[in-house]
Image (spheres, rainbow, N blue to C red):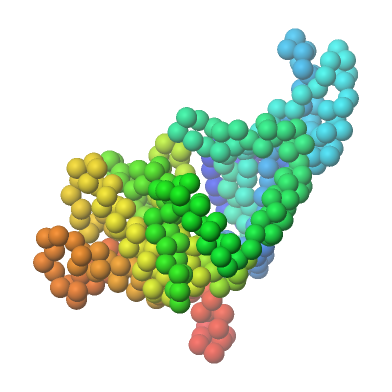
Length: 359
């Protein structure tokens, strides 16, 4: 039941009638709201996963800097408003005011059936095994403003735009590999260009010593379109859930200049070799189950996975299975992604040349 003070981790779908009764999930916490980056769904979508997404980020509180004073001020909804408030003095003791940030965030997906609400707490800064890393706001006060962060990022990107290609890129890439000898696992250039990357920590997360009861086991692989400037290029990422950080982390990343089965094969072949290497370090026998992957319904990705799986075992000592047997075994360790399946069904359903509108 909505009490206007959402707290803790929870999620629920609210009907149109409940939205009216709760004033569109009005909350008393001070928060700034903004839409999710485009593409941002459709408010008339049948499923909430495809709905229009809104983000509410808690603004925290402003309190008196004197520990003996109990004055608390409600923050404004904008960074500029908060900065203005912090220039003022406490109304009681005239001490300086300080802003206590809060990392709680909520997501709202508006769709035909109402609003799906998710309320979670987030960590500030980069999460590590030793705790939370330094946030941008801790580096410099102006970086509390996301627009300033965007400006600083543009300056860095602008400097990189001056980097030339051709021989200059080859030299720069060689120097990078020499400086970070274990980061780039492999690279191929030609009709198929793929650069595969991994850190020691990423590799250490490939093998788990426990199986969780939650749906967070195995490896999830997907390709991110639009990450690179060249539209045909993708960032292929394989990730696992890490209990230490309570989040998904990448265990292998690849730049690929396309999405053919050969591009995916190169990525997955390095993934399998990394798994085998890590398993050997821990004295664990390498079996097919270690290579279980959740992926979308891309035929090229599945074929690349199957080809890499077969090549890995065919070049491994002690293998007695044929290529056909290995291809069949590879299919048995591939798992489909429910979200991608739903999205595929939705796209197919909207194609009136395939599915009649009356259906």
